[in-house]
Length: 120
Image 1: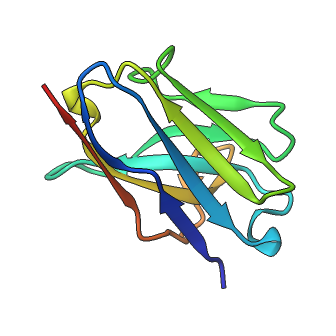
Image 2 (image 1 turned 90 degrees about the vertical axis):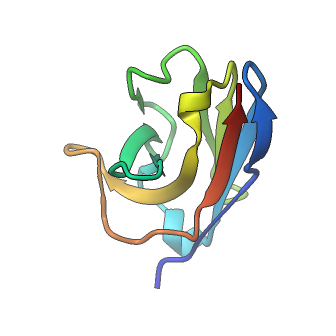
């Protein structure tokens, strides 16, 4: 059973920053790429960023390039998403998941998500 726990969301003003964390077990993360997705009300869930196991490769959606940074600490089984220069359109529930790199889609296991709200 894959277990992922997201944290770090909150309410922030436009232009502010947040750092999200995704914690999993060693078995959950070992050798797998991990991605952050988000889902805003009334919209489909979309990929935001992803990172391979040894951090050799990263992926960012065009909408967050230059503002968000994904990283991981394999010793701590944690993946982070540093979000800077936040915009109201970044408001969503953010989820982490194991991804299939070739398609940038989830393997199907999701955490409970963490709410990010950016006020204008």
